[in-house]
Image 1 (cartoon, rainbow, N blue to C red):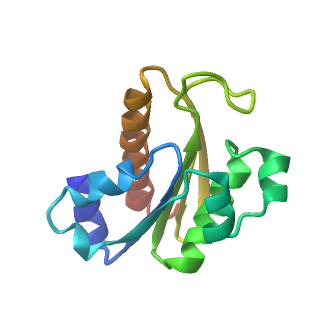
Image 2: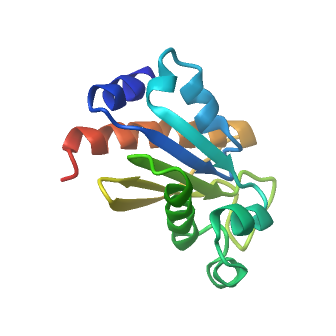
Length: 155
């Protein structure tokens, strides 16, 4: 996370997140680094669908139509977060860390969205491991993706 915070600070950018599967792990990893306060604005842990609806304004109709573990919902989570915390970079996470299938999706199914330079980048990963290994791995993967997107300058 040090590299990410340094890169954000160097470019005068801020970051925020909306987390479901990660339960605040991304935010926790960010704030564990010195000078995080220079770039980190805040996060929402929207673990329950009712919180996605009430805080991020994602309709139950969309949740029922697409399923909470979907590209559409992580994009809506990122957009809803931006409305409340207008950071330069927004990241959102939703997935299944186990112990069994959820919405017909196997354990380790994760969608993430990185909103940067007014573009939404949506990713799907199928990870293996324990509940906490899956959560930690997606945070690391997403951190690396944000660094790559920032380095590419929106190409």
